[in-house]
Structure formats: C-alpha cells, structure tokens
Image 1 (cartoon, rainbow over the protein chains, first blue to last red):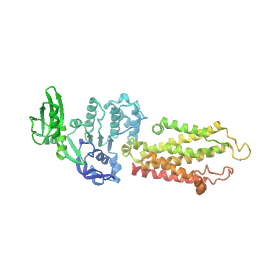
Image 2 (image 1 turned 45 degrees about the horizontal axis):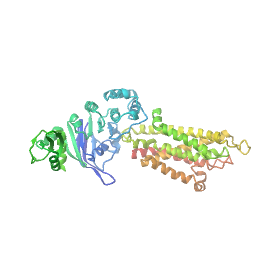
Image 3 (image 1 turned 120 degrees about the vertical axis):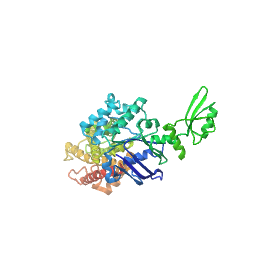
Length: 291
Length: 224
C-alpha cells in the first residue's frame, strides 16, 4: 500500500490556501505527520479520506486515482479517526462499535470478534457496557480508534490518537498502531513529537501548507546535528535575553541557575556545549530554518 | 439495527418534548365539535414533524461523525437514514393518534353525527384523520430533513420549512392553492363528507415525498 500525492493544492472558498503544491509519498508502515496548528495536516487528512476534493493536483492509492468514480473503491480501504469526534452518546461502547461495524459492511460475527479483540487491546473490555456519554475523554478516543480499525483498513488515518490518554495507555495505543501497520499504511498525525519518535521511521513535517521535510526520522535528526546547544546561565534575567535571540527547546531551573537547550545555526555567543539533537530539536530547527 | 437507530434518533428528551407538545396542544387549542380535532392538529403536528426530523442526519454532521460516514457504502448510509425516518414517523403518528384521544378526553367535543347533522361516524373521522396525518407527517418530516442535509444545518432546514408552512397554512394559501394546498385536509369542507377534492393536496404531498426521497441520495452524496 502506498499513497502518492502530486502537486496537491487545496484552496477554500475564502481564498485561504491550506495546502500549497505539496508532493509526498507515504509508504507502508507508520508514517508520521508533524506540524504546528494550521499547518494543513487535518486538511491533508480530509483529502486522503475523500471528505475534501482538492483544488488541483492528484492523489492515488496503490495506483488508484482519487476521483469521484473511484471513491467507493478507495473508501472501503480507509479507516479514519478524526481529531474531534463525538460518538453516539446514547449507545453503549459495544452497541456503538457493532453499529459502526455494520455500517462499514463488516459481517456481524466477524465484527463481534474484532470488537472483542480491539477492546482488549485498548483496555476497554470492562467498559463495553457503559454508555459513550459516561466515558472519559481518553476512553472515547480509544473507542474512536477501535471503530477506525474495525474494517481492517489498508490505509489507516489517525488524527491525534493519543490525545487525553495517560502515559501507559499512550504506549499501548502506539504499540497497537505499530502491530496494525504490518503490510498496511498508518498515517499518524500528532503534535506530540515523543509519540512519533516511538513509532515511526518515516515522517513529514508540514508548515503553512507545504512539506518542510519528508523522509526518515534519522535523517531529520541528522540535519539538526551541530545546531543544538546546552548552556548554563546564572539567572532568569540572562535566560530571557537568550530567549529573545534563539529558539529554546527546553528550560530547567536549578539551584545554581538556569539550564537551557537552544537551537542555533551557529555557535551562540555564550558559553555552551554542542549536544546530540532529539526529534523535537530537529523539528524546531527545520521549522525555524524555513521561517 | 432498528433498535440502535431508535436509540440514536429518539433520545428521551425528544420523546418528552413531543409528548408535552401534544398534551399542551390538546389542552390549549379550543374546539367545540369533534370534526375540529383534525383541523386543530394537522398544522401544529407538521411543525412538530419538522423539528423532530431535522436532525435525522445533521446530528452526524454536528458530531463530526459524518466524516466517518462518508467512508461507508451509500446503500448502508441511506438504509440507516431510512430506518431513522421510519421510527420517528411512527412515533409522530402514534402521538397524533394519542393527541386525538386527548382532545376528546380533555375538551369533550360535541358530535355532529350524534346530532344527526353529519353522515360521517366518529370512527370514520378518526381513520380519515390518521390517513391524512401519515401523508402530512411524512411530507413535513422529510422536507425538513432534506433541507437540513442540503444546508448541513438543522435550523436552516426547520426555518425554510416554517416559511413554506406559513405560506400554505394561511388564508392566502387556502385561496390560491385551494384543494392543492399541502394542508388540504384542514381546509376541507367539513360539512360535505362526500367532497374528496382535498385528496388532491395530499396526493401532491405524496408526489413531493417520493421526489424528495429520490433526491436524498444525491444530496447526501454531494453534501456528505
């Protein structure tokens, strides 16, 4: 399964261009999509799920071109978890999933087996008789993910799947997505860089409707090598001065002053040491470079 | 599937407000004769049908579930909406029948049949009312659902429906449209039980219902 995006542009009626001549190839496995708010991630996902028709450019899935006539063929291969979704509040978890599985065309018995399997995987089995409105935000998110997996899609699109989950659950969901991605494509969009670092080898970084980077995670981290520095400052006043000049990726207060981690093209004019970049550093570096 | 659709389309609050509406209507809308019950109920029940059915599909839009629904086969989506409409219409129909009984028990109307001024029995009048209500409720319910889907907003669906309701349920509507009025049952000549000219209006309603039913898949496909 591979998705090819060629010269994709999406312009809304109010003339706002959400995606601007973007090219991308999404291979098998978990593919991360990273970007600030308003970068165009959700618009891209809406195009990939056929919810939105692009203004220009083409998208294809395994050679099948996204067009009105091919939509039914494409749609039944997709599973989708939107960023914000309010699943049927009056139904129980089990009813809700059985209903959505039925709508997706999954045979009843098969659907029940899959529900049982995924509820176990997401630690929701004991909550299956609870009404959706009784669930916490994190639980609702997990049910949303299960509904996206029910038709065993070849292409799974998940928008912020770990929002509202506790650390243990986040790890469990990430592992579930990695297991699921075998011979499939999972597009994982998130703000949480840590999540991507844990599950993806390949990722794309979006900003203002364009891809700043698309490729392997190692390569992205490598581009930031030699541009990440740690320095110790004596007080908060000095730290504020530094913050005005550089991108700061972290800041820690300690008894003997302030330690900051900063991103800079050249070595800063203060006493500091070069350190190995993380994915988060690389993301800030590449975003700053384009700005 | 039917039970699930019933739970989705008929939450408790909807049943509660619909029942209250019928109770209040039967208490405050004054009538003297039993033949007036149908006249008193048809137009208000049309409003109830509009409000009741407008969120049949738009609830999927407001909850963002429609983005997932788009991935489902069109046949399944239409079947789901069809079942929701059916269960809602059945409830509205049952409420109409119950409301008719409430008018009787709360206001004790006089019977023209018993007074020898009409050939139509009370039971005949009741069944005629039920037949007319099937068409009225279907028409106004599907109209508001169709408009709500078209504009992706239940309030626009209800608003547009109310404009048509105001035009047709008026003296102007009665004079201009005559027997072809959408509320022809309420405007019929009650003194002549053999005058079935009002059926033209109900036949028009039925025709429009069929057209709207045929139009729905196209709107759902286009507007999601």
